[in-house]
Length: 276
Image 1: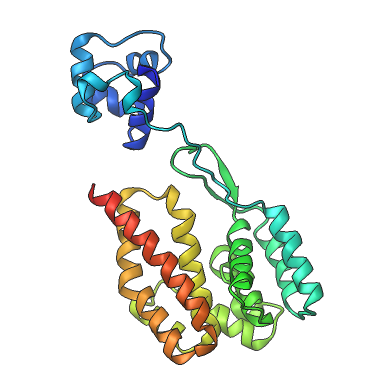
Image 2: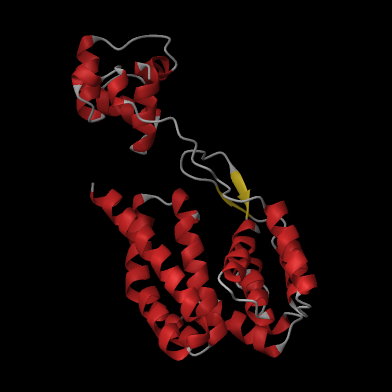
């Protein structure tokens, strides 16, 4: 890896802009840009400062034995077209009643919604519909084939994101009630929110899947402060929710084991990175 690529790679990994790095080094933003584009080389004095700020040993700056792989951090783990085709096939083959309508409803309501890509591709916007599609595929892969659970997965963010009242959803009362529980009101404390979710088996397993998906994908776009908040909330509320599901809704025991394994692995990895 050339010195310009190394500077850029370490800067991005440290979540610094060119302007922020320039400020730390007491140089211009243009100078940093020229280094990264290899239009100029840093002086020996600036190399020493780069070594300190970027935490790269001076003798390794620009040498191949300290390379950081040029990995591409994906904004989309799976194709939304493939997931959609898979779920429509599942709905048809398993003769699910409300799930096909929930897929179509979510596609329309979330059609204009986008979420940020990961922090390495800040200009990229990702269709929001990927989130419930991934959750539904995940649930089915875990052996959850229930029509109402899969429908609630597709609808769980509809009210909060699109300004629709749960009672106005064109679905069965059971689905509307679960979506209502998953829709967080501003006046409701986090503790009360999770307590109400625990009372309903569908809302409980959907919330667990939701957090697992968020930690697995959306957290890539979170800043440090939001990551810490997410870790704290997961440990304080989501882990107890998983234990509650295990004891109160045993039909989801196998799914809970896999979700908990994935969540714990990811959260502990995030914690180690935050502490490093």
